[in-house]
Image (cartoon, rainbow, N blue to C red):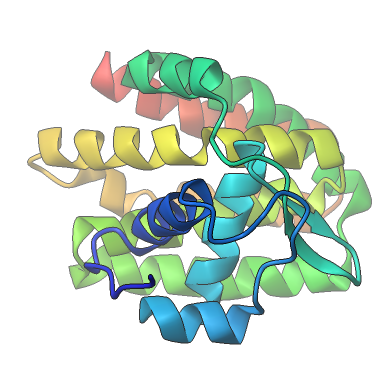
Length: 225
């Protein structure tokens, strides 16, 4: 049945526990999952962690979130072929994939962002700054991913959002690998680059937003190549 999970890293562990329960047949195909509050209590995590885990499994074509109806099981196993491709990809491959997705997302976000998106930027940037100071690597990675997903969300393009969510498990692993190789913690001290992306989107400058996103991710890629 359900079990408490180790807190490392939370969202990925929660996704794997949900996937295990789905694979065991606890929920039938087409069945609606319990609500966030119930799942959070069962797994011993917060509701935001459950939301991230659900997004991850939606990207892996296991769950489907239906507006106003809930989250439903659409497969009992993740798509193994795609998952294996992502797992084999090295850090550089992942960053190149992010460049393609996030640069265009930043461009679109500069034209489409809403007041709610700007609020999300402020919140996730503040959370990322706090996490960069003295949090464990996995907490910092979650905070960083939250900002980048806020940019993706602000593009208001369902395909880009789905692509990003599909990449999240590999992005998370690649970032943790990067941090372990980065003895000087350079990647924790690039807050200004993230603020610059958010500022360009806020100022409705698509070309600048895309350029700053590309510059940031290219710099990260150069640091590990």
